[in-house]
Image 1: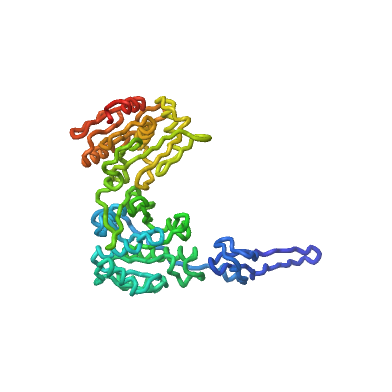
Image 2: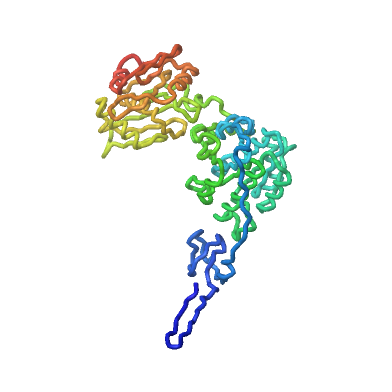
Length: 467
C-alpha cells in the first residue's frame, strides 16, 4: 500500500513506497512461519528449528494463472454397487469389518500396538487375494519379509516387495505396476521430498497420506496404510490423518483369552459397529466364527453370573456379566466396573435400592463383563441388575437363561432393539429360557419369561423359577 503526503507550501506530492522485503522466521521441521524468533516452534514443538528468511512480498504477490478444474457430469457416471465393486479379502471377519470387502480407490488406515499382528494380518490379506499385491516396507528388509511369509506358509508368486521410503518413487512404481492392492508398512517411515522435514513428523505424515489418497482415487487402487499408536492408544501423527483416509480400523488384544479384535472407528463405505474376532496361532490369524462360545464359559453356575446378548453391528453374540456384592468394611461403599460404564452402574444401583427395595447402601458392588469387552448397549441393564440381585441374595441364576432388557429410572423394563435376533442366537446355542420385557414376543424353542419391572425380577430370584 502506498502512502501519499501533501506539502501545502510547495504544492508537492511525496509518495513513500513501502519496503517489499520482510524478514520472517520459518520452522525447518514443519514449515510454519512466525514474525519473531523463539526457541521453540509453536506448531510442531521442535526446539531450535526456527531459521531467519527474507521474503520479497512484491514477487510473492504476483498473480498466478491456472486452468479451470475439470467438471464431471454425475449423470454419466455408472454407480458402483456395494457387492460388485468390492474386492473380497478371503477372510470373512475382515470383510465384515470393512463393510463387505475392499472398496476400489479406498485408503485404509490399520492401527495397533507394536507386536499385535498388523503385519501378519496384511500378509494374510495379500495371500488370500491371489492377485498382484505390492508390499512396501520401510522397517524390514526383503529377507525379513520373506521369512515371515514362509513362516505363515504364504506363497509369494504374486506378491512383490518394494524397499523404499520416498513417496514420489513409490507413487511412480504404483502407476507403472497398477497392483490390485498396495500395503504401506508403515506410514511413519515414508517421506515426501517436497516437505522439508524428517520422516515421521506431522507434516510428512499428512503430506504422504494425501499423496497416497490422490493416487488411490485417480487409479482406483485400494491402499492399506499401517500406523503405529501412542501410549495413549491413539494413532501416532496428526488427528487430521484420520480425516484424510476413508477407513480407520484398530487391531486390539482381548486380554482374558488372548484373542484379537478388529474394530472400525471410521468407515465411509460401511458400518462402524462391526467387529472381527481372531485367534493368533503359529500359522497366523484364525477366524472365530462363533464369538458367543468365546465370551461365555460353559458349565459356570455361581451367584452373580448372568448371560446376556448384545449386538455388534449385525452380529449378535452372548456375553457373561459377573457381579460381586460384599458388605462394606470401611468408609463409603465402593462401586467398580470393568467393561461397563461406571456412571450407568451407579444409576442401576440407585434404581435397585429405590424401586426394588434391595438395600445396597452398605454394600460394595463390583461388576465385570467377562472376556475384556467394553459394552455400551442399554440392553445389558436388566442382566446387570439381575447379576447384582443374584449376588446380594445369594441366589444362582441358571446358565441356560439369557437376560435381555433396558431398565428405566422408574424400575420399568423397556424393550430393546433387535430382540428377535438375540433370542434366535440364544436358541441356536440351546438356551432354555429368556427373561425379556413384556410384549408380544413368541418362541417355539425357548421359554420366555416376560417381566414389567425389576420388582418382578426380584420375585423370580427368590422363587424356584431360576434355579
